[in-house]
Image (cartoon, rainbow, N blue to C red; front, side, top):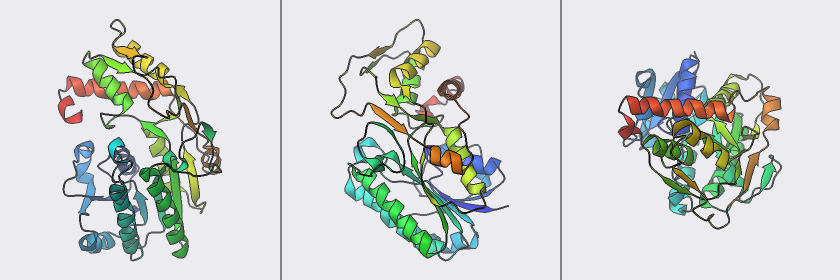
Amino acid sequence: MKTILITGSSGFIGSHITEGLINSGYKIVALKREASNLWRCNDYNNQIQWVNCDNLVSAESEIINSNPEILIHAAWNGVKEKDRDNWSEQEKNLTFLVQLFEIVKKTSISKIIALGSQAEYGKFEGRIDEKHTCNPNTAYGATKLSSSILLKSFAQQNEIDWYWLRIFSVYGPKEENNWLIPATIKNLIENKEMSLTPCEQLYDYIYIKDLVAGILSIVNIERNISGIYNFSSGQCSKIKNILSYLENTLAPQKRLLHIGKLPYRLNQVMHMEGNSNLFFTRFNFGISYSITEGLNETIKYYLNEKVNDTQISIF
């Protein structure tokens, strides 16, 4: 049984990755802060060895003694929209990463998987692959890009396999309530109206379980094919069609979504799609969930939370 060290287990993406690893038989050592809310991990909390990382120096010996073989870095400070251009908040991620590297050098970790973002490319329109020039226009994107450079250099110096995934739009159960899909589902369940833009944007949404499957394919691969990879579904959906599907499923007679009532924000990106053929080919990987299948599972999750009367803690 391999031991995997993971950061960000309390977050939306990190919690799903952690669950997938546990279900696949891996031993998990997860870093968390004292203030971390672990509600997303309630179903498997007792299967995780938690390590407080408010002070990484003091946590070092516990991490080393756990003998991790793989590091998955999913934590990130300042992911909310209001913090995307907060340079002080974003800089903390670089400091944390460098501190983490110092610990990794004292372990037997031979593979690092880290989560990047399409924000590293900056503003673009259309379908892009890894050859597209990176020109980040936010502190968040610039810091993500800087982290990828740090990871590559560190891993090569220390003969560690490294994988940097530039992730596009992800959705699914346990997502932050202020993102579009969970916010829409919540309002429709509660019969609340929403004012929206024309929603003609084409976005590349990937279901969280497909992302987890992609991470597992990297964990399980034996050969070294290190590098930077886009990770997306490779299939675009019009935002308006997604929202209409949610409304027709949850409130077909009520018309609670007022599409077109609000203007687009300044410099709105209208087509954001990732070309992930490089990842799909090298890892012999394919997407399992259509947008409809993923939305159905997400709807079911939130309806179950409503029935169980736990929606207050979720939303």
